[in-house]
Image (cartoon, rainbow, N blue to C red; front, side):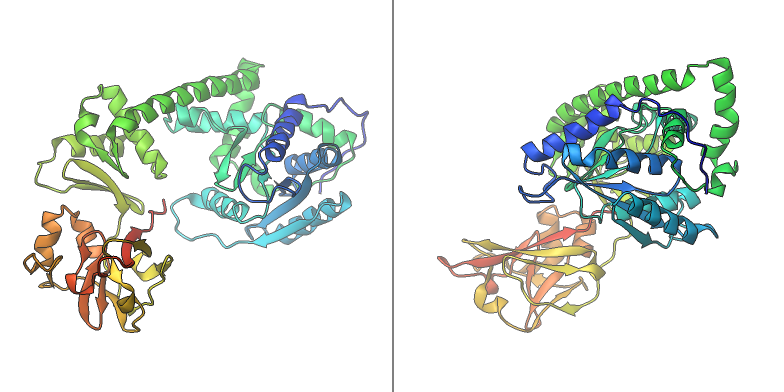
Length: 467
């Protein structure tokens, strides 16, 4: 555990850090909780990601000094990755430090996914952020500072990133629809945090892995940054200034992409006809933005292959580009994002959840039941016990209306322009062993609710790919 002799207290007003917290608290109070996770009468809740190291210890101490004045509740979360033989000691130290400040601290143990493809650092970060999203708070507050920001810019520069990557870390962003992520210390160099810790006689732990230069960030921190600082002593300021400029460029590109998406997006798909009318650079910009909305960020070679697929593939083919757990597929002049692996689930019995849904993990989707005044499955059938979902076997027959002919399910799907992968992966609904409905296509006429009565229409919603 590291500490230092107490020195005269420096001025630690840190106006930009204080202003970020103040603006967020004011927003929460004025909007009655803009992230929707609390009731209007509740005090805004901040939770610090507390490793027990210098940076997060300083952040927790700083916020503890503001909570009464600004009127927010403060807690901490220590994520125990189990990677170091000292991990238990770090957890105990973090909890003791928080208790000294009268801050409740939760310790959450995580297990990293083996062979995740993210490396140890990436897998640890993914597990950590997954825990952040589970917290009962309005914002997670992290202790990233100016040195971290400069390192991130350099890492992303070496990866060949564009403006989004070179913008590095924002001081505030949504973590999910109910929670924000705040980084109030981004404008402060680590040296200032160290001075703060020394002046308040704080104690913290040192993670031995921070000295291991086999990790790229540590190599940049210990070897590259000292050289850069020797060449340009103001490099921390100028590199992070570039990140601000890149952030503004990225915001502008997003605005342009949103305008172009209004012309190109059709439901969740991207229509190629209006997309092809854009200039080449705007085609790339809006395509990247559409992919990013699904969490897909392709490397340059894969991105160029996708453009080639979208433009050059024969019109009667259905090409797909697979990336991790997702795939981008072309069908009838549109690009669609689907799961990479597409297969029907097993046959299983269900109970119709009127105005509700059946979560079907084995089918990788959710079956929702929507009240319909005209059409839908009659309620008398929905209350039957013998209702099941099955995959296509081939040869199924289907009649959508009494005055229409019985046709094969395959022909019906082709006529309705249902994408090939949906024909194979959408659960078919059987009642008493008879095909009653295919979500997205229609209801077998024998099961349709009579005129003037409420029926229940099944809607199939595949899970979004986890990328």
